[in-house]
Length: 166
Image (tube, rainbow, N blue to C red; front, side, top):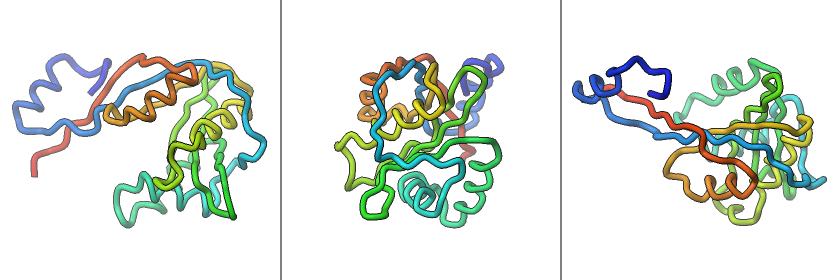
């Protein structure tokens, strides 16, 4: 449910018992930081990239293969900060005309608070040629929102899903 939702639909679904799920903030900006040279950037996800992303964002046990097909359905860039051959932080960027959509940002819990997501974000933007970018982040993830604000992003919208009652 977001800005283009039919008037009254969100309220009607709420009355019918559909629960609000994943309140999300849309953020846009023009990041300007210099990327670190040690970030790996490829045009397809590799097994280590997928494993890290799924370890953080995996929503269901058997969905990785489907998620990989969805991710690779359009041209994109995949970036990872790796140590010892293991991806610690990953992200995906999809060029969309003059705008870059940033998706799948994920950092393993044990590697957080080291600036790795910032490093991945900067590498994606630089490899795509810079310019305007947008991303989405869950409303409850204050740490990620703070990071993105420090990189020049501001909140430009919100949306959420509604899930049927069980």
